[in-house]
Image (tube, rainbow, N blue to C red; front, side):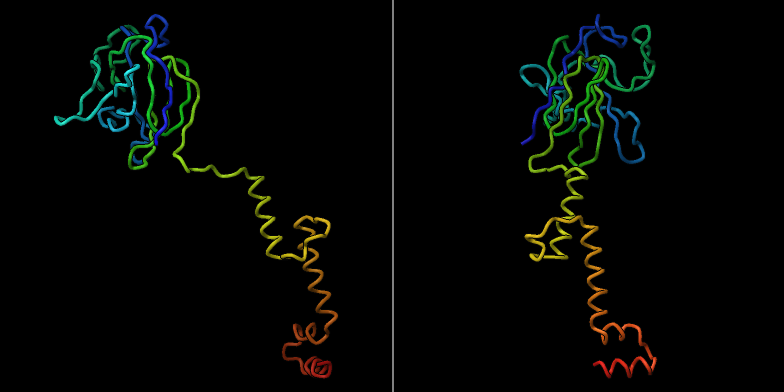
Length: 229
């Protein structure tokens, strides 16, 4: 079951850090994959993501699919693309879509992702139904707190120190088995050295085995090995 992330409220235009002609939301969508990675695209192309932005106490979807097609549930005051700057300081090429929503309205994202508040806007990192990563910037808001929701059952990798300790335990069990029980714990490096030294001593105490590793085709060593044999 998907979680819910509080992503902020629509800010009063008098307190907005961006130029504004009235209370509204300006979502900007940035794919983080493919040839357009890092570039803001038309939010009309990302309606399957933006339908998860819920507005107000009634949790009204920002946009939703109907029998007739997609429907924006709030008035569009400025579309994506070239425009006449609506107020001083505003852009002449709009990289989002302005939707008139009253100041103080709560916004929530229904789904999985990570939310990061910034000055005057919030940043939501999430994925589309195909698993492609996106970033959604929510301008003209007082952003919520940092939050992260992962799908149920998904676990994060343990810290490197913990992984290293587990790896050492596995190697110890593989090399020494139950024989290491009851002994004073040694580091893996010490135990490997002990294994190597033990192997050399074992060969030196068994001359035929030791000599056979060096005799090759030397007749003299072959005869000595046969004699010891």
